[in-house]
Image 1 (tube, one colour):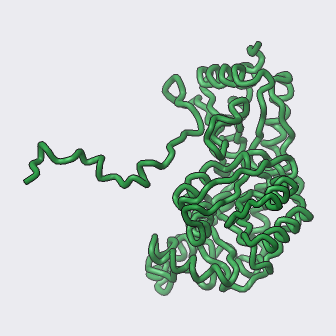
Image 2: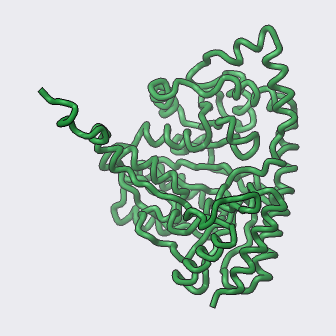
Image 3: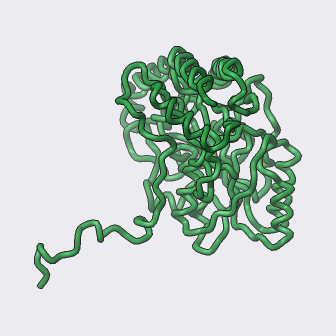
Length: 400
């Protein structure tokens, strides 16, 4: 009989699959305790001032006060989501509501889509550099990651086609087509069409993760992937518009995939918050209200991007980067290479500023992009962003 003293340590209960998962941090712990003057330029969260706090407060009070809405708003709901919300989203997207599935944000939609199809031994093509949590999702499926370079015009379709001709056979391709995270590129419509053509020819599907699509600084829109193709899956989120705390997004899936995603969802978390869905439904039903929210947010992020670019340019030429045309980030290379990048990160931390180091975005997790950094200008309050950029500029001027 095994006694308590001879029983295996409790940590041995962890499954080998979970124990083998990678652990990574986007930035180093600051060298001093964060205080009121500490500036975090890591998060790609929306600016608080861009969120509709008053409207959400109003809608929530109304929902919970109503005798016929309070109970349902706190009750269970369908696995695929609130039918009325799905219809509102479908009308905006121009698709059948049956193809719209409500999720707990864009990342959740990405996970559901990939977990529905990918198995150990499969190949999933991803951006290089890549939004890092996608790496964790692919790890969970057991599939192999195959990076394809990303540049100013998004994922390199020419490189992908060459590799497909040479024998690459992925199950899926993941990309952030609009204002890429972290690189900032925008995938032109012609290349989107070519991706779909390649997917149809070689038998994979394109999974477009699109949280920044509505945040072009000039308000323009690149035509999106054709949603009538059964090789296109799109993950969207309300995190950047209504707030990440609502944990709400949607997935547009083709007919062959949608029922399997719903079936998987039933076995994981059952449904998204009914209250969050009711809030979003009430707001989207207000005619052109949502478009007005997007327009105001775009203006604010455009000003933040201009401030960031102007301040960094005035600090000298230590950073090499393209001015962002949209999205939430500046992706920069430190001209002095890895030693200068490491020195910059260390001195920035000492000055009370942290940002994402480039190695976090290496899909192979081999330490590449160590000479890069990602600055998020979206989340910090304007005065904190200004202070952080000024400190970072002062540090840049000290680099050899």
